[in-house]
Length: 352
Image 1 (cartoon, rainbow, N blue to C red):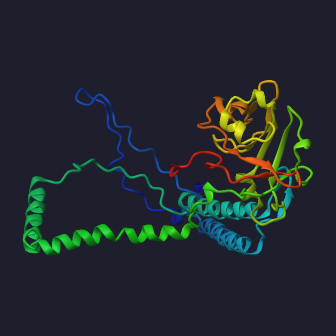
Image 2: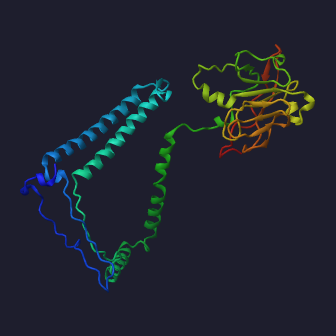
C-alpha cells in the first residue's frame, strides 16, 4: 500500500523543515547546504492496521524470548550433564550444552530482533537538524560550581574533622572487600591438589590398555607403554581429573644410555617413568622415537630427551617432564616409590 492509496485526512501533518531548507552557494559559502530529503512516510505511519501488525510482530518476538528463557532454565534443571546426543551435522555432543546454547541464543536474538523491528516500524523516524552549540560551560557557570564546591567543603568540615575523614576513607576502602569475599563461592579452592597425584609409595603401575599390573619383563628396550595408578578405573567419578595428573609414560632404555644420574637412580633396570602430560599446555604426549629417545608432544612440538632427565630440547615447554621413582615389589610388579617430586603439567602462578 502506498501513500497515494491512503485518504488525505489520514496523512500526518506537514513537518517544519526550516533546518532542512536548501541554500544556494555563493562567494561567502561555496558549499551549499543540500538540506534534508523529503520525508517518506512508512506504511505504519499512515495505516493503523499495518502498525498493529508490527506491534503484534514485536510482541511475538518478545514472547518467543520469554519462552526461550524458560526453556534455558528447564534445560539446566532437567538435562543430565553426562547425556550425549547425536545432532546432524554436529555429531555427538553434550545435550545440555546444545540445549543451553540454542535457548540462550534464541532468547537474545528475539529481544534484539524485536527491538530493531520496533524502532524501524513504530518509533518516530523523523530526521531533525540541530545547530551545534558549545559543549563547555560558560565562565559564569564554572565560577558558580567552584564556589559551591568550596562552600560545601567548608560546611562539611572535612579538613577540620580528621577523625570523620579518616574513618570515612577507611570505610570506603574496606567496603569493596565484601565483593571480593563473594568470589570465594565461585568454586572450591585448589589447595594443594595441583601439587599431588594419586601416585604414592606402593602403588602398582597398571597398563592402560590391559588394565593389568606391569612387570619389568612386560617392557622391552625401545618400547613405550602408558600406565595409571592401581585402583583408578574409568567409571570412577572424577576419573578424567585424576588421570590428567597421574597419566604415566614408561620407556625402557639401556642403562648405559641414560645420561642423567638421578634418572638412572629413579629407574629400574632402565625402565623410566615420566609424566605423560606436556609441561607447555598439558597435552598428552604419545610420540616416541626409540633411536634418539626423544618424546614429542603433538600439539606444539615440544620435544623431551627421556635419556637425559626428560629435558626440553625443542619447543615452547618451560621445564622437563616430572619423573616418578619406581621399583619392584616382592611379587615382581612395578610399583611407585612415592609421588612426583614436582607438580605435573604446565606451570601455574603460585608454583614455587
